[in-house]
Amino acid sequence: MSSVAIIDYGMGNLHSIAKAVQHADGDVTVRVTDDPASILSADRVVFPGVGAIRDCMAALEARRLIPVIREAAATRPLLGICLGMQALLEASEENAGTSCLGLIPGRVVRFPEGLSDGRGRTLKIPHMGWNRVHPVKPHPVWDGIEPGSWFYFVHSYYAQPRAEADVAATTDYPAPFASALAHGQVFAVQFHPEKSHGVGLRLLANFLRWNGVV
Image (cartoon, rainbow, N blue to C red; front, top):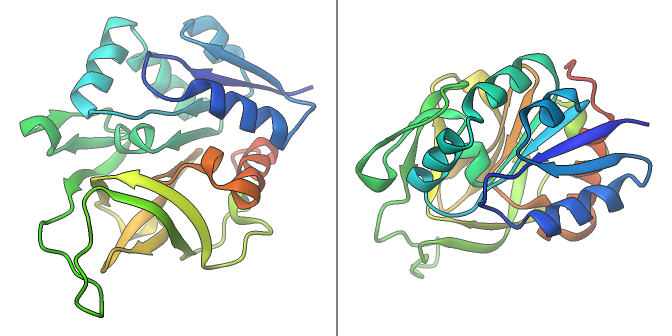
């Protein structure tokens, strides 16, 4: 039986994520933990998060989890979700600028004010609700997921990876932005698979089967 550790650093809807992961694969052992040994003994790691990036990085530092996440990302499949995805990049312009984990080259920026869709309607910030996700390259985590599937988003900032090759999917708001990243054994999504019904569960199930090889 495989195991997955969901990193608990005090930020994120951990119960919902744990329940969704367990539902996606009933044979997996799920641990919600901030214990480094438990995280690094798991076959796969989920790094979730909601809230502000400065609080996220401070919480990771306080719990001494920064080197743990870096080691996990280098040695086994790791799934970043929402703020967990943003924290994987080098820096975010949120909170007047915050240094992040630097596992994926690039930065996190805010949606500009005054966005509008093709009909001239104002687009709100945060980007909240259902939107389509368009994979731009094959990846095992996309197995069985139709291009343009709807996933649930809640965010005001988005990733700008330095390398085009790290973009795994885009979403329009109104211009395309990177809504999923793939870098080595790391796969990260801006949306919430645990809130995205059947298609979100399929993505989680695919991650739980992925061996880190693309």
